[in-house]
Length: 476
Image 1 (cartoon, rainbow, N blue to C red):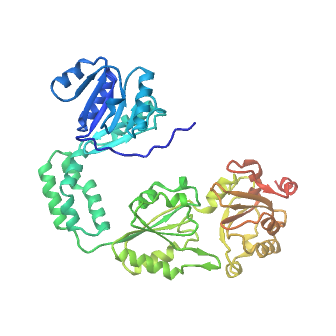
Image 2 (image 1 turned 120 degrees about the vertical axis):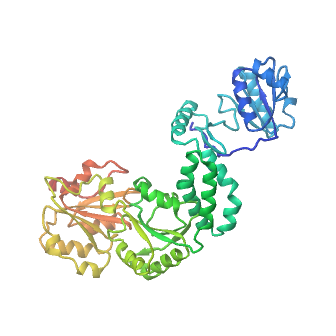
Image 3 (image 1 turned 180 degrees about the vertical axis):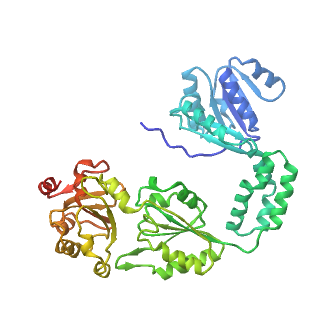
């Protein structure tokens, strides 16, 4: 059975009564951690370590000598069972459950209602690592790795920010402006001065930066390619932009998994644009970009695939440039590359295709502007961004301009997503395939000899669908 997913929480135990059952070395370690958190600790056991007795003698803890009884649990916030006796540990857990008291049984996840994580302490900054009791040694190893990454000065930096929190909030009422100031605080000269141990100088630098904080907000736009759907294909730079975004303007085809990576309190606005059904015009998108950027927001324009491959990214940058809005571009994995890869279809191949053409054919007007003579040439691959409309006309034009009717084709619906479907056939039966399998957008069409390789090289999702296996084998 998989481990239950835990709800992460940090408990304030200062001044609150906690019981530890057990008097050995393990119990001693638990008591030490509880004392550091300011808890009022009572320890119950037949016998105690020397340290536990000494802590009791100095008034730091209370000791109860004897076997566990349920009365020990009265008026406790939580309890830790740290004995070597399985029966006693189970009795503690059962009694705690009856009284709605959080209980941890050391090394027994099933009996525990909370887990004690591996901790990286940079107080007041604390990082906790938990495997829900499934692999405590793994949690410890991860803690060691994280320890090496976190500078010891981070605790002092967090304390400095805490002391100035009220003044910063008062000076910078706008949430986005305040967040950007704090990001500069934690990554700029103040953080460096804290690392050097020059705390007084760091505090003076923080005060100066706050006084000079620009009251006029400056927004910006980042065009981010979201890829075709699989969140794992989002770049690290794209992920960073989503984490920093105040506003995310996203296309309809951006997957829920990618959107879930954005900062939780970011405003998410769908600007759905679909062939034949434009819910938001391009001019409307431009105005939204301008509105939020001028309000001082960090705007992410999140586009399916890559913003510069049939994504109108160039048009949006021209608009931003003309209105003086700072921008940058984070490329994404375009649909042709991802759909082909997830369908097991190489776009180029020494034996079949020495070039690849990216084509958009969303409507009759775009079909009419294509150079059909060059597109129909042999030994090349066509990657057609088009949904599933216009297949009859596309097939007719390619065959009329010299492309063989037996040329292999592949239709990839929802490429890279869990619901991906791949349909293989030939150019001649292309429209029939789309109708037979009721293909819907988003879908990418691949035309060329390489499409036949999808039958033997598929690796992701269900096996390809086809009604023309014989023709594919002959063409390959």
